[in-house]
Image 1 (cartoon, helix red, strand yellow):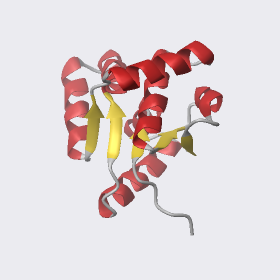
Image 2 (tube, helix red, strand yellow):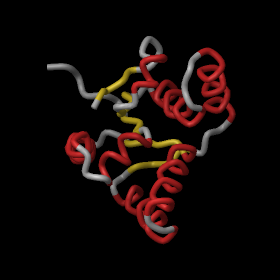
Image 3 (cartoon, one colour):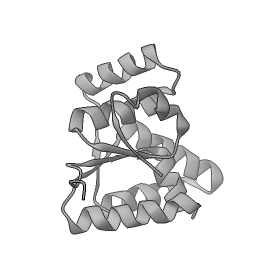
Length: 136
């Protein structure tokens, strides 16, 4: 049986799948429960949280987007403020790979935290050699 990861980083793709009841959303829900039961830290970049916020706000309202971000905190997800070390690593990923800048922040945070990146976004195939990815 493989060892439990030290931490998880959630990409906005995973969070949107969770909130929109997509097939991968159930896997995200199970992962959140498991992480909380085993005290595995959950992380998300504020850049990706912003992505979640604007996606929800466009589809529903700003109030619903705010409620979603509050719920992410209640689920135990910690937001990383993207200090220079992570921002620089995100820029390195973006400079070398075809991926969105927001996705580069998820990858950089996962690398920094020695965490498994939770996603189903195929853009992350670009950094699979650098980052541990838990595919949904």
